Length: 441
Image 1 (cartoon, rainbow, N blue to C red):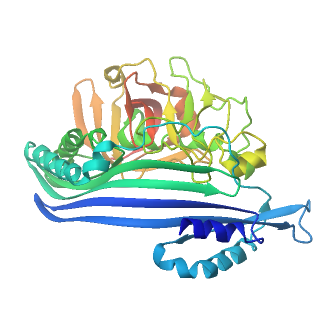
Image 2 (image 1 turned 135 degrees about the horizontal axis):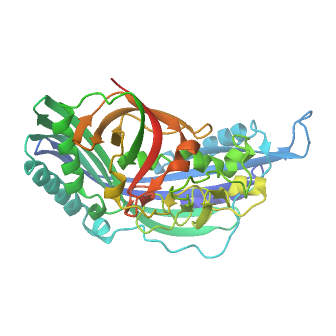
């Protein structure tokens, strides 16, 4: 069927460019209801993701004239092979209604990089992997006092991808993904509280189920006794899920798409973050080549090879991440879609970052939602769990919110020397920021 699709695209003179991604996925799944296995299944899938470009003269009256390009995407599975002509006609019509600045598909650009994406254990024995994960979760939950396992699910996926485009790019690669979620109930003196955790890694050992359960169990037991944080201005240490999104504003400033669409005015060589005395200078990279990271790839969705590129060095913008389209618009080399965020570690031991001063220090590790605005840098998020630390001890807190402005806060940041690799993040395990606003009691 793949050859049939390519032949159809090659012979269609309405199209200026095309790409096809054939994805074969085998998903082995296991579901728990409390400690009991409720279901197990294997799902096989084959799908073709197709994108077409239509380039034509610019509409009359468009400033600058010239030519414009429109794009459209659609999916086809083997059962829909007979509808390919109709789907392609609809895609060409849709693309003809779009008038973007002209661009083309990615061209062949050297050797596809080598990066570890496929775990042999999942490829050869996925059923054993999900069964091992279920048993590890049961054992970890059983070892925690006052904790009940409510439900869990595990997915061990093997994906085999072939990529072709009209510019001659041709690549075959394999990858794996181990994902899932679980829910625990933890009972403390103040009652029972629910804790939910999800995860996505390329290998089961990288999930760290025992550590995840231990952390979730502690949160569950303490949430019943947790109180609102104090209101005021405090130093705050972020760890856990906040690290996945803390640098969103910086990534927007370093985005070719954002620069082209005038969501940022930042120029190469401009200082984005000026580190205050004692703060850790910010060095941040796009890195699609981190072994086993979920954000790593050989080719991005538009066919550009993965790479590592320093975007911000010591607070100064050095480069922009760009897919094939926006690289052409800004006349720069394509880095591929944003993969993993790599942040250089600091010089501060984690224990030292958790030492309070004259004011209480707040360590936050769980939020209802935390994602700073990529354009303005503003953030405000409800606190689901944290600890308020003083010289005399600590207490759990929940509720209320933490807010601030990313570009101001990062100027005071102190990064831990200890690092961790998360789904799409490699960098300091904790970040301490000064003078953030907490709203609570």
